[in-house]
Length: 196
Image (spheres, rainbow, N blue to C red):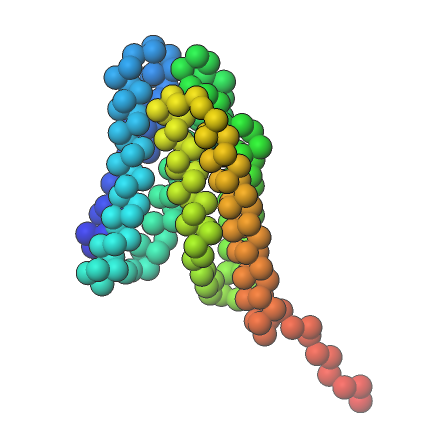
């Protein structure tokens, strides 16, 4: 259990606190709950970079960390996006369903692809791309913007940017997955024995 993995587990543990604080704020309108939710999300988002830095700087990359880190990202972002997609007027601006659908659709597609590649090939090679990291940053930006209750023209631009980067990164992951499948001997057509 490395320091980087402990930070990642802390990020996962912050998610239910974030969800509960958002729900309490929507129900009661007490500003303290909104600030607590904002702090939970901001700390989890910042620690996303911290655990990666610690893992690289102190050579703490592990197989457990390779699973937990993206899992923490997905759990945080999906729970926040789904929660804030509901109409919480007048407390929060709702995240549009087209952005929610893009984010969740890509994640479902990636999960299905990982299962298929693992089943067919046995080992999945995930190559992180800059546009995928940018999509994560923009998604976090949208959520922070909503939690800060900023209702200005920039929010729509950040949402569109998040949707485009999310969609493009999903297509690139599909492309990488298709290449892994086509390079695997198990995906080659079975050869029939010559007739006697």
